[in-house]
Amino acid sequence: MLRRFVMFAVAAAVIWPGAVVAQEDMAEETPPMLMISSWKCDFGDVGAIGADWEAGGVAAANAAIAAGHWASAGVFYHDWADEWNVNFWAVGENEAHLIEGQEVSNAAYEDANGEGLDLWDHCSEHTDGFYQLAESTETDAEVPGPAMAMSSWKCTDVGQVWEDWDSYTLGKAQAVVDAGQWSDAGMFVHAWAGAWNVNFYYMGEDIPAILEGWDAFTGSMGDDAPDITEVCSEHKDGFYQFGTTATGD
Image 1: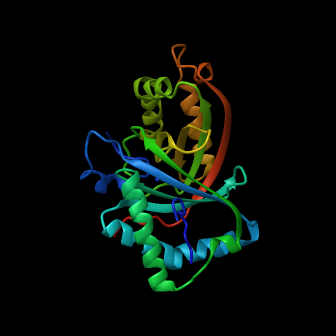
Image 2 (image 1 turned 120 degrees about the horizontal axis):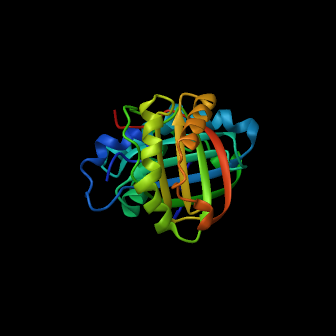
C-alpha cells in the first residue's frame, strides 16, 4: 500500500495558496502547519509515482480534506535540486490533524486502489518534517506553483530570521508578486524536522520567471536589509515543479 506520509506507521495566507480558504476556520492564534514527506526515488520511476498521484493520490488526499484534517495537499518534484526528488506535502491546523489526515488519506487510497503502488519499490530513503508557516505574500493564485524555488538554511536564531522576514523581506517579496513576476512567496521554519530549519520559497509560472523575480527582489534590497548570514551558516537552493493540488473541490 502506498503510504506517502509514514511518520508514526505540510496570520495571513498560508504557504500554499490552495489552503487559504480552508484556513479561515483555523484558530487565529495558531498559524497552520506544513508536513513534508521527502523521498529519494529512482529517476526513471518518478513518472510512475506522479501518475499514481494523479490517478489515486489526489482523491485520497481529498478524503483527508473532506474529513477536516487537511486544508490542502500535493506533491512537488525535483527539477534542479538535491537527491530528495519526490516531496509530498499537506497543510493542516497542527501536528495531530496532519497525522490524522495521513491515516484517512492512506485508508482512502487503499479502499480505492488496494495495495496500489508501493513507494519503497521505487525509492530508497524517506524523511518527514513538520514546519510552522510564517506569513506569506497576498496572492490571487488558487493553487501553488506551477514552479518553485526553495532556499533552505541552517540557522542559530530562527526568531531573528522570522522577525526580519515580517518587518522587511516580506514587503520586498510582495512587490515582486504585485508586479506579476512571482505567484507567491513565503517562509516556513522547523517545528519537528531536520537541520535545515529555515526555508524560503518563491513560486512562479516557470523557473525563468522565478529567476527574473529574484533579480528584482535582490535588487530592491537597501543598505538596511537584514543579513541572514549573521545567524545562519549552511545554505542550499532547489527548483521544483508541482503536481496536481488536492483542495477538496
